[in-house]
Amino acid sequence: MKLDRLMRLGCIGALAVQTAGCTIRPLPENVTRIDTFAIVHKVRCEARSAIMHVIYDYIRYTNFSPQLTEYLRNNLERIGDKKFDRLAKGGSFSHIDKYSNASIALDFKLRGNENNDLSGASSLARAFATGADVIGINLTTTRIRDDSRTFRIVDNWWDLIVNNRERCLRDFRNFGENHVYPITGSLNLLEIIDTFWRLNESTNLAVFKDTGESAFIDTLTFTTTVSGSFGPSFSIASPSQRAFLIKDASGTFGAGRTDEHQLIVSVYIPDSATSREKSKEIASKAIDVQQARGVLQGLERLTFPLSAVPR
Image 1: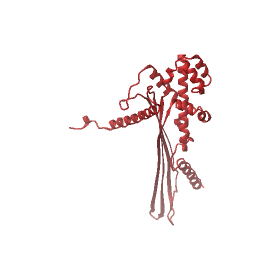
Image 2: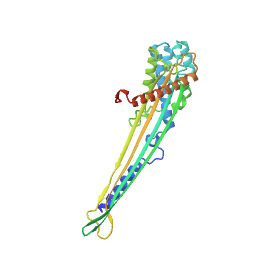
Image 3: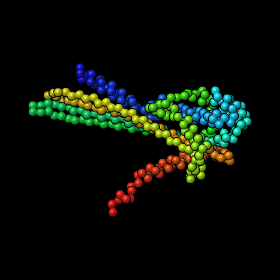
Image 4: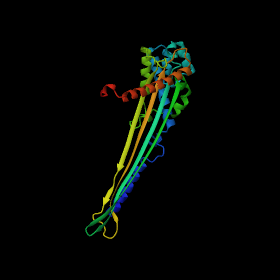
């Protein structure tokens, strides 16, 4: 009876561990319950909300148009409508107008890796007068699956505000922070946009020598690893003297998954002569420069110092 219970327990444990990582392609929705489209939509709507809050705070603190401040006080969704344009142009609209061609680029990398290990060992034994014959059996299987997808979304600030109003109002919720899979929750993009705005207003952002333009870039990387294992075993005290029977057996069932989610945010403000499309191109190019710089820094860390070479 004890052996039967142990075997049942082993089967249940093996099933639990193996089904924890049984997807053919480890996509984000397998663990986050939110698919790629929903993740992108959430991030864009959060960025949109952050931009609107920063614009409103600027209008409120500078007080260049009290009427406009009052108009937006209870509804930031009015930013960009006809009355907003009329009231803004009645004040010192040039302070905001210079941001009309601003762009934001969002570069996503979503990677999932799963591994499942199964190993087992058993001994067959048959007793005789002076000892026992023993046959050992071992089995090991390893399964690894990996999926990596990268893409980039580039928006103009005002297009993002005006053209996505209905979709964001319908679908976007104020997600709280998700400490297990942060990409699915609030990323505090308001801090990124606000920091960029204040730096751009009070200082001169450095110029990228590769593009000749200035941009503000923030790189967010989240890595979550979950793993587990189960190892049942049993043994029989005395082998049979008539035939080979199982003397002992053991197994290890393991599963693990690692999800790496990266988001690079690039914000760029062009001069008045730069078109919206060119502004978007520069914001995207700034991410390319940042990624190339990261590769070079990685190679520099791997370079063996010449001073360490024996002479």
